[in-house]
Amino acid sequence: MKTDIKVPEAGESITQVELARWLVEDGSFVEKDQEIAEIDSDKATLTINAEESGKIKIKENEGSTVKPGQVIGQIDTSVKGRKEEENKKEKEKSEDGRGREVTFSPQAKKLLDQLDIDPPPLSRPDSKRIRKKDVLAAIASKPTGSGERKVERIRMSTLRKKVAERLVSVRNQTAMLTTFNEADMTAVIDLRKRYKEAFSEKYGFKLGFMSFFVKAVTVSIPYFPQVNGYIDDDHIVVPEYADVGIAVSTPRGLMVPVIRGADDMPLVELERKINEMAEKARNNKISIEELSGGTISITNGGVFGSMLSTPILNPPQSAILGMHNIIERPVAIGGKVVIRPMMYLALSYDHRVIDGKESVGFLVKVKELIENPARMLTGGRDPLKSLIGLDDKD
Image (cartoon, rainbow, N blue to C red; front, side, top):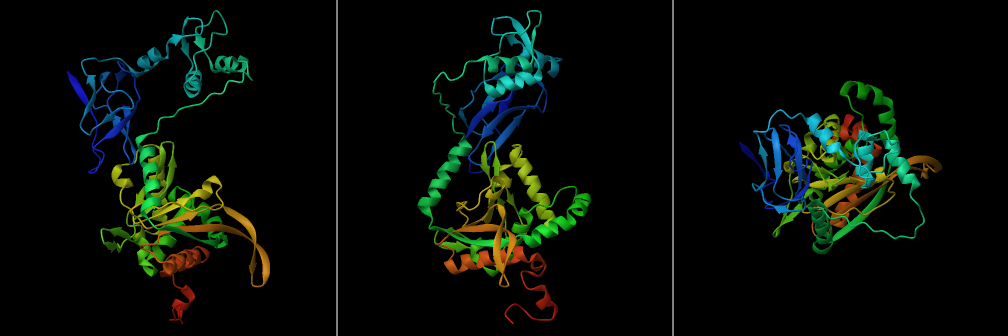
């Protein structure tokens, strides 16, 4: 009996995807639920799992454009009893540089795959196994300085091509501007230091910076609601909720998982959700639904050392907040020069939807909340004024 391997549905608007790569070889034995292939859509990389155990027959090559529901291979379920470990050993067999049959240690196999080089000759005539040190010795013995100028051609994935198209379209189809400010991170850093051990003990994960910025953004939106809006035909649509996209760098390219209902979440739940979404994205476990929608986005170039940048909008959204690295700098406070941990903030926005006054005001409000985290508990208002019945206008 044979079971078809079909391309899964990748979302309502997606009519074709790219068969990125097979994770198994043609004719090999696969176990039920084993990951056997990856497909790239314009939003994410999805994994196909084997529905049954058996011998696999590949019908479509890597790089092919396929449609949801299309058959790309089959599993012959009549082939039984071949263990995965035996299959692995069979795949490890090969020939060395002199044509003799050999096997590889896992470390040597991994190194050969990473470097994409042919197996080296055996170091000892009486051995039939190539080890990691054999590979390293063969690399070290190769002559250098030959003057050969090599280039590598890397085929763009569907995801990366779509991201490239969107980046260009943003420049052509929006009136994008960027406004800047800076935030003193002292209060947030002190808060994290004071409670980091207790927080980790209670919740099982660390308290990061991103959750503070997501909270600051969601608290600031009611003051400047059009920052959360977008254009639909001749209308500006302004949602009364905040679904925040968090840009995540993955081996497959940039992905933006969306935290839905972020405005209703306490900071602890935001931190939990950020960690969960980022982990899913990096491990290709994210779903199309988790990447869809979003009313505003946040990107953190600071994790890579960026001091300042102009983040690009994630259409149809009209605003994206850019975080950057934290650097101790001299600043003037109360007439004195002091050293403080400062972060530059950037807000890119679509001027068709958001006026300059709103964009600057929104970024100032985010800055205020980061520098005074207690205000996040009072909807952005000064908690001491609220205590005595005053508001920020009094």
